[in-house]
Length: 430
Ligand SMILES: [Zn+2]
Image (cartoon, rainbow, N blue to C red):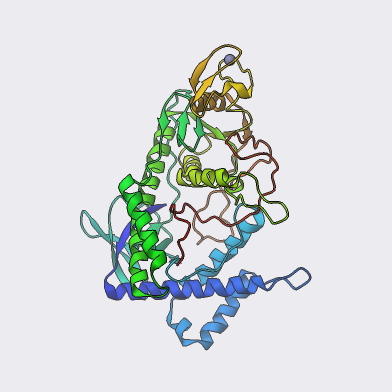
């Protein structure tokens, strides 16, 4: 997915927001239809039935009729895909979309003449009902673009993403294998001994963020001043997020270029970041530590790193069992909890091998055997206009040896949606 900064005029912005509103309206209708379903009731309508209903609704409401039919239909298609993902078990149930937070729409049947380069730095794209919208030509637009998605983030920036599966990076052919260990203190430790850290907020940024969050909670709900503080928070958060994503892209490209095989731990981030609170009957244990760990995992963008690695080093990423990687000696194989002297130090009690604890874990991962095979590309037979998608990840059920503090096997934790990384302050509300 290559994303570009879109620069609509004020007038165009209104048109784009209208598309977003209609896409969201249709999506929320679909969510409502499916929320009525209970065991024993007739099945909620699928895409074909919903598309027929959309035609009826368009005949009735001038507001919908005035909008783009492809935008509205694609919203239904996206919803159908979201439901499929939900039933496959890779994603949560699609939920309500909210103005200001979920602004975006998708346009399909894009022809080559709809994307033009104007000069070295500018291009323009045709958006139905809106016209030619300029965007920053920050890199080459991939060939054969068939669809794009336009989004507006909470900081008010517009982006356009042209759908194309990037060409995988060819393997260097050196037979080199690298193990990557994820962590909270060190974001990624390589078996080569390299320690990589995701850039987080600077101390100045963190201070400003804390101050803004305090100001935010003091402002009256719905007031202009509260809105101003919210936008300031969104801008700052966007900057921090961008930096983290940039790190993920550079790191994954570096790994895909430098090694033939990249081995990572097989663990489900979703399972690990579930709420630590538990239920009333079974309260969770070590709630504080877990909350900190959850934040660390999400901040460090581990899930995104693995996803991008799988795109770039297609078929060369292997997931290995995560059991005992932190307790096992990578030199002699001896497993003992006493091997781990501290968060950072590892020294084997059997052979005396000493090394950074995360690097030792990464060496174990590099030596591990794959537990899951990656699937092939999903056939695009039924819906040619759909964005190209990679096959859903096959999560294996085994191997949840979580060595991090406060997480133990089989503990009852309540699943609460976690929407990506959040700033430090818990009191943020919109
Ligand atoms: Zn040893």
